[in-house]
Image (cartoon, rainbow, N blue to C red; front, side, top):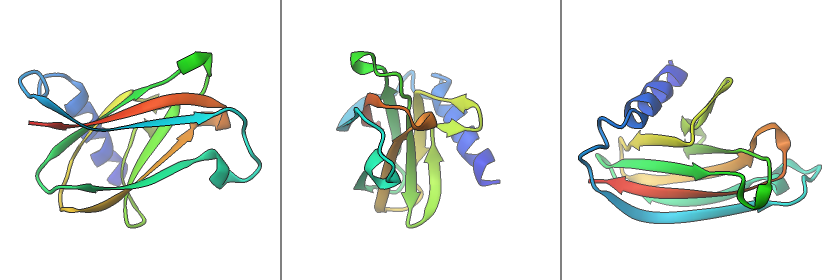
Length: 129
C-alpha cells in the first residue's frame, strides 16, 4: 500500500498539470559525489535532516551524470524509520518526485547510487506555491 501511495504521489506531481500554475520556491540544493564505491555501505550514502512543513508540497529534482559519472541517485525521504518517498520503485526511476507533507517534522534524506555505481548528482528541493 505504501509503494502505491508513493507512486501515485510521484505520478501526480510529475504529470505537470498540478505544477503548471504553481510557483517554485528554492529551498536547498544537495550535491553528492561518490568517486569510488566503498565496502562499507554508509560510506556510499549521503545523509541529512531537513524540516518540512505540513500542507506544503515539495518537489525533488535529481540531476545525474555530472562529469560523466554513470550512477543514478536514489533519494529516500524518511519520517523516523518510515519511508515516505523515493524516486526509485522497482525498475521505475523518476528524476522529479513530489511530496505533500502531512505533518510538520524533521525528515531524513538519504541519497545513494543505484546498482552501487559511482556517481555525481545534485538534488534541488523546491516548495510549490
